[in-house]
Image (cartoon, rainbow, N blue to C red; front, side, top):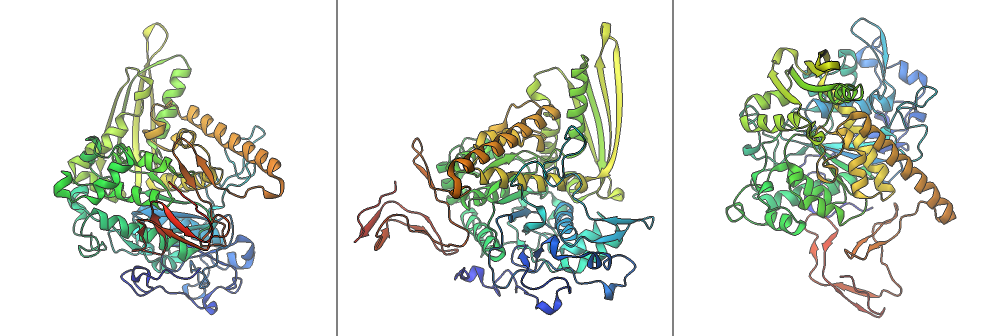
Length: 591
């Protein structure tokens, strides 16, 4: 594909110069022909694991000096040729934080099969531990793991990774700063991760704690984004550039992994309840609309308009803007999911309380205390509104059971322990003859180490279901296990963790069977996506082959003029149009 013509996408524009390394800089086992794209607007290749042999892996361990370590590359293919149906895109809002740095490091390390020494000198190797989409089924009864039992699940090594951040810290430096992984691993990845160019983030100081204000220097300027409408266009342009630059041929998912926002009051006012209202509100000046629109809602809107799914990994009320769901349902295979990743303490709570209920006990009190010292907790410590947002999702996890469980949560910011979360939970239940049963748990683990597998699985599952055009509501319920409080189309699902995993398994296997049946029915045309029309909504899905930029549908289309067309100011595509006029080829009307 030819590069976008807009100055927005210039390799020397405001995003900074894009560096494409020469083949001589690649490790000897990696040719310039097998480099697959990764990371928005910057150096990041995906190298198939088959192209890395054992000698290249062992030469990356700690016994080598810094100068002898082969350069790990995340470099883009200079030819921009889409590579494989297995690729997918992951765009992170807040990529410079612990979650973003660890995810980028994990993909890079697994792709190159990096080895290193742990704190006691023991050898360690790269694995996707915790990612159920990347693990094989275990044990004679299967266990959890889908890679070897379900066809068509994307390989995370083929993911293109990029994103936005309001802070200028380089990703490799952030990995070392936050002490997320062993030092010997971080030092091997630091230089290449530092080459990853991050998009400037959209910043509104009303939606972030005061502790973050001074660091917010890597942002869209007032000239680039004077209002919400301009910010939306800038974010959409970033997404288009990311997919083009990296040759993404699979589904792209935008994930909110930045600090928790205060809730957007406008989302609860009913002003954003339809797709039309949402888009009109974004285009309306803030003085007229009567309130600001949160950055997370803008990122979600941009994602959906660009045919991407959006996952709200934070606690804010992004999905309360119901127009997002309506906008996503107008397409096939686009999903808006949330809220707040259920990674550690909360995940075990839903397991433990489900166990107590299944044992015939009556849970009455769940009292928990957690403390950690990462940037997200620092943000909560300096923003009362953001803290109340976080407490809402932590307290509401059992609400759909409609039982009288007194659930209390206390969180504390402790800078000394960094990203290592520590939590203590006491469960009080009533047993036989009303006698008290008490159980206590203690957990200690890296917060981002628990969260990143959920981000990867969320993106892989969105790609899996999107490729099968699986219904919106079914996908929302299937992926409810990822979130503390499933909202939107998943609202009201059973909060029990194992019930949620059963629903995921059912939907995944049903989609797999349906895919096989469709291939058998279609024969040689299996898997090819087609135009689909929903009569009740008059919405059309256009599926574009991987090697084609534009399709003209119909016979003898000599000249087609689109009426009242919009778009083209940030890229090459038409966004909307009303009617058309054709000459020489008959008449073809879309309403």
